[in-house]
Length: 447
Ligand code: NDP
Ligand code: 2IT
Image 1 (tube, helix red, strand yellow):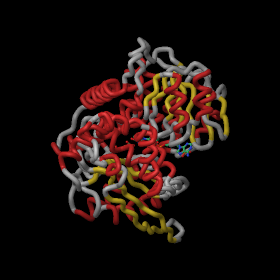
Image 2 (tube, rainbow, N blue to C red):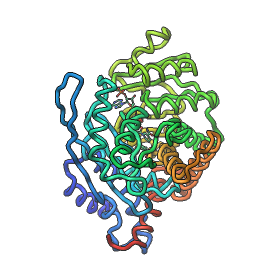
Image 3 (tube, helix red, strand yellow):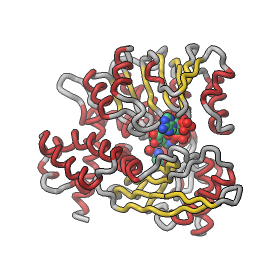
Image 4 (cartoon, rainbow, N blue to C red):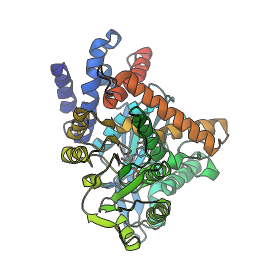
């Protein structure tokens, strides 16, 4: 089996040698799915996984825009349309200076499995740009988003490809992108999700990824007769996912003690309560400030510049910032400090070696494609509401989100439970996600 996986990965590396993040994401899937394929004859000899690692379409384009001083800038825009076997391409847009084809391909690949897990009919895609919204004026961001959509509009549509937010793309950017799409196409449709509530957005979509991550962790803890009440929780990031993961964890009685950004992390030994979190939300979402400013307002808190929060003792860790932000050393520290549950709010925040540490220790570990699927699932609910031209209540969407997260948890158990009772959520998520897409691909023939 090891040789089979290696031979497959050699082929992937030959074609994508310069794309480390993409290779990392494929490796994780190959390790769990290739043994499954070997045991199930219908997938034998079909080269399904090899077909799944090749994007159906990879679009790269120039985005030229003018800053407030009249200077012209050129960024690179992308949309990776990875797999449409079970529905229109669906996945976020990331605006961050580190964006490149490798990062977007890893995200698009993960998205295929994640979207399959949600039980909703969505294929997988991802896009974005190396544009950095940090330090740009609202007008500059608007001009960039308009220029980006000037090209992207010809590749997307409510039944073709439906982008949403990700790092650096929130409500502001979705508004500018939607405005330009509507102007060019002269149609008001659900081409994007994460829209404002007064123009087609779904209630709970802003909260969904963070809430869903906590709901998933809740289901995991329940298997051990545990819950969030009184637990110490360490969270990385301070953006959309981190904020709402913190909000839900606090509401469930947990003590959240850290948040971070790319500058470092804050540790508040007294716990970040709802008022303190409201301060962080205003700081990050409206003032677009830095997390270090927290300690100017809350004097008992500490700021650890250039560090990640994994050195803080906790029961539950929720990595909610970015890929590869938690390495094997961090994993060992978390384990030796007694951490019993890690649920990824971000995409691939744990390195491969860190994942191996968690699985070896048999703690509750959920990969992002399972635990952060609540965001895209609620995007799917936004698409349904747009198609039906109705709007569900907060309670209705939240109840559906909870059900979906429970379903995903069940699927992980179905495919990931070992003989000794340990649930390998990585294996469970990968196989459950694979089966639905692979079956659809088999039904549709070689295309
Ligand atoms: P935001 O842009 O709202 O926030 C990102 C946060 O992560 C910020 O605090 C940012 O800090 C931090 N961050 C970004 N890059 C780095 C880095 N290189 N090192 C350390 N910290 C970093 O994005 P989201 O909250 O939406 O996304 C966070 C993660 O969740 C991503 O992995 C994303 O793919 C994933 N995700 C998002 C979903 C969504 O619905 N939004 C759905 C599912 C997954 P700084 O301000 O300093 O850059
Ligand atoms: O990684 C993700 O799942 C997202 N950024 C959300 C995608 C979406 O279409 O809502």
